[in-house]
Length: 95
Image (cartoon, rainbow, N blue to C red):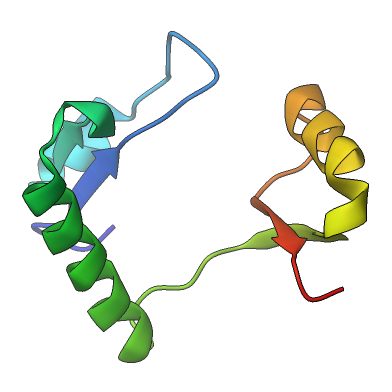
């Protein structure tokens, strides 16, 4: 994490987390915890626009764990619930 960086946490399976407080403090990193369903539609649209701009500028990348065809939606859900995948699980609606 860069000096002055920011971490936004919006979801987690676990209720607890090990956070390297000293390392983050030395880098002046801030952590923000968010619950997205508390935001208005205007705020969510602004967030989406910012994320889209970062993606278009190649500043944000997602780790894709697995892509399932739409007809394997049950298997995709099972993969998510099992916790066995690390990264995003996607559905390919064109397949």
